Length: 579
Ligand code: ARG
Image 1 (cartoon, rainbow, N blue to C red):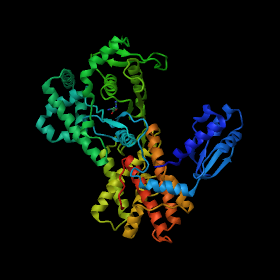
Image 2: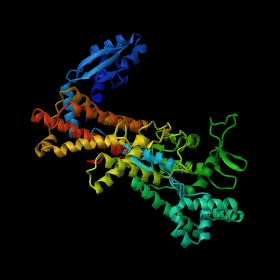
Image 3: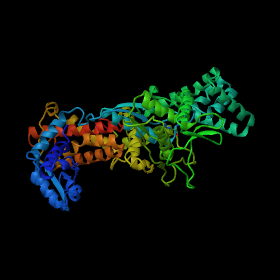
């Protein structure tokens, strides 16, 4: 499907070649959407210095050589040297007709697909998933979908925290309670179980000592201990799986590759680093001191790869995971969707991995950081009692609130449909609130705003999608059928504007795959929905003056619904047909 820019770009290349020579021909014309025309090209501004002429003169030179016959109706120089481009209605009509026949709505494979690991969600065993895990799970899942849609081989990795010292106390607490009794009750509420164990650990020195012994047994591979350990990981996996299902997250059991998986690799990791001369012993711990990391006083910062007590920690595990991703999974792009506070950890892990030769061109690693979710008071989002908000409870509340909103908006829906729709709206609201703001910034959690049917919300997009679908329920069967192959002919400005927007999906999705910023897709979908509403206000669809126009507009409406549904799907959000 033709994003107009892919047609315009080669024309600019030819013009640049003719006007300024081969050397500058490959300059990016920087064609973007514009308020005053359909597009604007900023290339003259970028080239002015190199050419040694004022930007307006450069723009003039370019357009004198620019051949866009049949594509643009108008090419003008504006302001300090922008080149404004207005598409021809015929060209846009044809491009939109082609687009309507494309099942993928313009989302097409990238020129250089690769194997991408997306490390996301990564909750900790025997702990409740809390609101902090929401962001990683929701953002990571959307990025995985987007990267896949543009043709990459995506390997999802759920780096679950399933190893380490807490398991000593958990297992001992389990044994104290009696396995049977514990399994029947406490395991279903792992969070409470964890807290009980923690309290005992802090208050009872004998228990603490037993717990430490248990950790040694676990790490030594004691079979009986491993059996008990597996009880926790299995119960947690079941729990996480249920949450993912409710949230519509594409993570499955086979994507769980917890910290424990890398445990057998850790001695080798440290040995390799030692052999390469990348380690020093500091306070009894084996540390790497990657270049460029120091504290405020200027002292070098250590990445601890083996602790003083001989155990391995989070950093060693991440080094092993990274090596396994480049070497065993063959990934060339490694994404870590983890909160901003771990920025330094990942920067250091990547630096050490590069020094060790485990991460080199074309492979690269990126920490896909994100900000925190804040409460209405702009402090960390907490329950009213000051506790951490559990994800499962958040989900319940989202669906409840959505159900109330749906009941108000559409009292005629039968109960089963209403429940299904409420789930889609509630989950959608939760996800969209997270995805639509700039990833790296904090955002304020606000039920009313995220469930509003107006503004840049999932509910609004879902509503516009359902609105389009309802047109089709009212249309004549013959028109619905004919619309599938109808020529789209754009006459009204509102049609032109909507069509132009619809052609942008492929470009936006490619940009999200590149920049890892899902909020761009949200902004785009919001623009589509808004353009559609203007179109629908200004142009009759079912009552259009003649059959051809009616069918053309139906085809345009159908493409709108598909673009919205496809875009929402890439965000992990469902688009019900009615609501
Ligand atoms: N389990 C960790 C946490 O809850 C996140 C793990 C992120 N992934 C990684 N490869 N370190 O903080």
